Amino acid sequence: MANLNASSNRPLSPHLSIYKPIPTMVMSIIHRITGAALYFGTILVAWWLISAASSEAYFEWVNGFFGSFIGRLILFGYTWALVHHMLGGIRHLVWDTGRGLEKETATKLAYATISASIVITVILWVIGYAVN
Amino acid sequence: MSGSINELRTPLSKVRGLGSAKEGTDHFWRQRLTAIANVPLILFFLWTVISLNGASHKDVVAHLSSPIVAIVMLLVIISGIVHMKLGMQTIIEDYVHSDRTKIALLILNIFFAFTMGLGACFAILKLAFGG
Ligand code: HEM
Image (cartoon, rainbow over all chains, first blue to last red; front, side):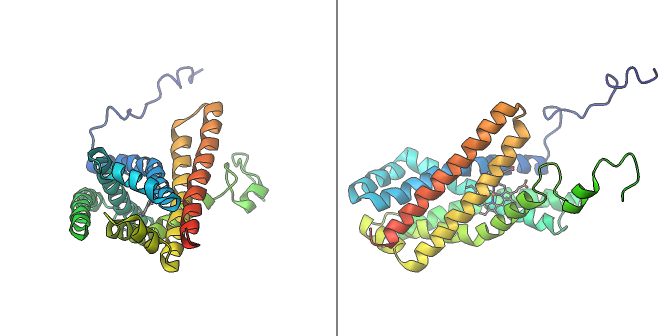
C-alpha cells in the first residue's frame, strides 16, 4: 500500500537535452559520430581499391571525383574523423588500464584530443599536397 | 552452491560466465583487440594513401601490388571491418529497441561489413596477383 506511488515518484535521470554539455561528454558523442562516419567512409576505401583493380579509365574517373571540390571536402572530413577517432580510441585504451580517469585529467585529454586531431589533419593534408 | 533467493543467476550460468547476451566479454575483447591493431594499421593506411596522392594508375597499381603493402593493406581492411562491425552493433543495440527493427539492422550491419570487407580484399588480391 505504501508503495502505491512507487513508480510515479521515482526520481528520473535528466534527459540528455537537460545536461549542460561538458568537454568529456561532447568528446564521447563525437567518438561515436566519427565511428559511424568512418563506417560509411569504408565505402570510399573499398570503391578506391576496386577502381584501381578494375581499369585505368575507371580509376581516373574515381580519382577525378576524389579530386573535385566536393571530393576533397569529403576526404578532408574523412581524414579528420579518422584522426579524431584514432586519438579518442587511444584515450579509451588508456582508460581501460585504469589511468587518466580523474575529472581534471579527463577534461584535459578531451581538449588535447580535439586540438591534436585538427592540427594533425591539417599537417597530413599539407604533406599530401607537398608530395603531389 | 548459491544459497540466496535473491541470486538470480544459476550455478551453471555462473560457471559459464557468459551473461545475458551469451557471449561474455567476447564483444568487448574483440573491439579492444582490433582498436589496438587499428592504430599502426591506420597509420600505415594514411601513409599509403597520402604518398599515392596524385599518382598515376600505373604507379598506384605498382605500389599496391608489392607483397608487403598488399599484406598490410589486407590486415588494415580485416581489422577495420571487424572493429566497425562490432562498433555499429553496439550503436544499434543502444538506440533501437523494437526487436524487429533491431534484428533487421543487425543483419544489414553484417551484410554491409562482409560486402565491404570482401570487396576491398578481393581488389587488393587482384592487384597483388597481377591486375
Ligand atoms: C584508428 C584506430 C582506431 C582506434 C584506436 C579505435 C578505437 C575504438 C574504441 C576504443 C572504441 C570503443 C569506444 C567505446 O567503448 O565507447 C571504438 C568504437 C568504434 N569504432 Fe573505432 N577505432 C579505430 C578506428 C576505427 C575505424 C577505421 C572505424 C570504421 C571503419 C571505426 C569504427 C568504430 C565504430 C563504429 C565504433 C562504435 C562507436 C560507439 O560505440 O560509440 N573505428 N573505436
